[in-house]
Each structure stands twice: as structure tokens, then as C-alpha cells.
Amino acid sequence: MQVPAIRERMVSGLMNVAPELAQEIADGLGITEMPAAMPKVMQKKVRPKVAESKALSLFARPGTVGIQARRIAILVADGVNGSEARTIAERLTLDGAVPVFVAPKLGTVQSAAGKALQADASLEVSPSVVFDAVVVADGDAAVDALAKDARAVDFLKEQYRHCKPILVLGAATRLLQEAGIHRALPSGKPDSGLIVGAPGKAVSVADAFIAAVAAHRHYDRESDPPAV
Image (cartoon, rainbow, N blue to C red; front, side):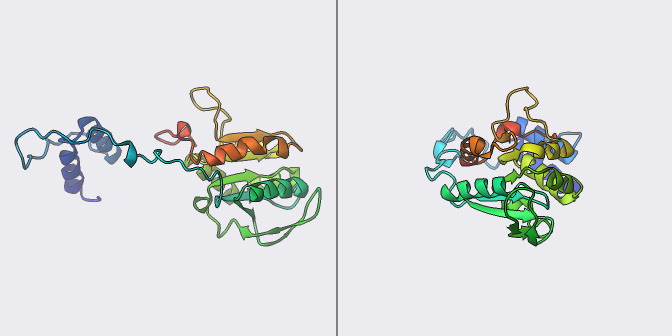
């Protein structure tokens, strides 16, 4: 696609399919002058057998297994509210999900409340794309550490950009600000995939987060170019 002639040839073919789609793609490829439609192999008008197929839609079969087997990152760092992080992890496990404690580095994560946690993975080798959702645990010191770590901020940005569910607890709302993520959509409507829990209220928002994860992606958040 680095060769201009190839880009123009692809767009010219799309002109016979959907001119509005061809225009959008041309805009994205930096083509300022639309090419003429490619000559058709068949000159007669062909009537499509199927105008729309729900069976081919990605939304046709949403499934009935809830959040089973979904991998959910729980971002933690020293100073985290360990009791709350463990509580949300246990609840997600109960519903069949696979929570993973992700920290700046492997090893023991010192807790401000409750027992210490063991990090299952590090930010260095655990990109956001391998997770279906993310939880940012509460804890002032932990949030401060994550906010200073560009990998954690990028992790949250990518989860948001890919329309994946996000749960932030207590002080973790500061990480939203650091990532430039707004709680509401650009339209002003609530973001169904962004759940915010008050300090010590992980249990009360668990159901809402699980429902958001079960919905998989929240495309109302999507924009071109990305807002975050």
C-alpha cells in the first residue's frame, strides 16, 4: 500500500461497490483526487442475491456464557488496596473469568490494606491487547506509581481505544485523568463500558462491570480519529 498506484487501483474498484465507502477509504489513504471507477467485467447490472445477512454479523450470536474465559487485567502496584483487589479477582473467578494481577514488575506487591499480592505478570511483557478488560485497583500510592509509569497509562488508553470494559476503583480515577479519558461519551451520554467505583465499593459495582464485560466491546466509544 506504499505505492500510490496500488492505493488508487483499490479505491477505483470500490467505486463500483459503494462510492461513499471508497471516499472514506480515500480520505484515510490521503488520496485527494478520486480515481475513476474501474471498468466492470460484466456490463449488465447484477442484482445481489442477499442484501443483508444477519448470520454474517459479528453481533448475530452474542453467546450465553457470560464472562467465562475472559482474561481481565487488574493493574496493581505497591500501596494497592490488596483486600479490594483480591475481592474483585475472586468475584471475577467465580463467574468463570481469568483475572491477572499485572504490576510494574513481577514479585510481591506490598499492600496498604490486606495481605500482599503476587503479581502474575508485568507491564513490560503484558500488552493490553491480550486482555478483554481491565480493572485499576484502589490505593493512593499504587495509583501514583502507575500514573508515573507510561506503560500503565498506555495500557489504559489502549483498552479505551479498543472499546473494552474498564473498571476504576477509588483513587484510580486519577489514572483516567492521566490517560485523558472522560467518563462520558463525546455525545454526553454515559459510557456503558466505563465503571467507576467509590473507595471500598468494589462489591457494589462488580455486577455492572461483569455485565459490561459480557457485552464484550462498547463501540459507542469509538471515534475516528481516536479521542484518546
